[in-house]
Length: 272
Image (cartoon, rainbow, N blue to C red; front, side, top):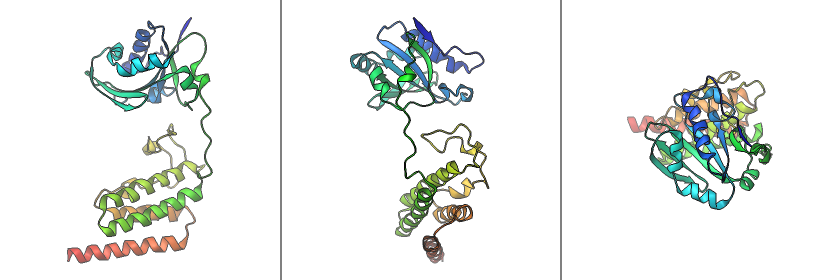
């Protein structure tokens, strides 16, 4: 007997279109389940006008999987025409419907699903009484490198390397080291702080909803990420936050500050 778990009241009408797709696919006996992910998963209250629909399609065999990967006409089960799509992964596609609904999906057999660490998913529909989510592998535990010491020193060395890129004139590479890589490590430190209250943390993307998190002491993101032409100020802001919130090694901190001073002197000389 089929099981539907996606029928909900008071949710965004676009999200209900995933139920419509599931009803369409249920007519194919080779389709085993439709799983919602992200705001289409177990956090449906987050779904709004700006949300796309992330989902898994579960099939019985690899032949069925390949058929659904190659075709896109079945996406019309959402109630719209496919205007654009491309293969973004060996297991799936991204697609845009003609009415603006954006989709990202992957297709797996039941066996393949059982090897995946699925988190935050919701069973929209499944064939039979077995819960397809019960097949998922255990989400990997935090690694030995997911520590305050690691992220702190990664951030510091990201700043050091980034400032040398800036001195070499590699402004884009410098921006990535300072305003992306180092800031990513700051976000990891925020996550590890027991005083932090994150808003529905995303295990795969630390930047999601960080603006709505309750952070101890705050985090000056506008100063940490000022843009392509402001790598010196970005580095200073990240360094100031790191030294204010953590015990930092004076050697690397002094080296970073010396680089910012050198860069500032160089900029003043160039502008003279």
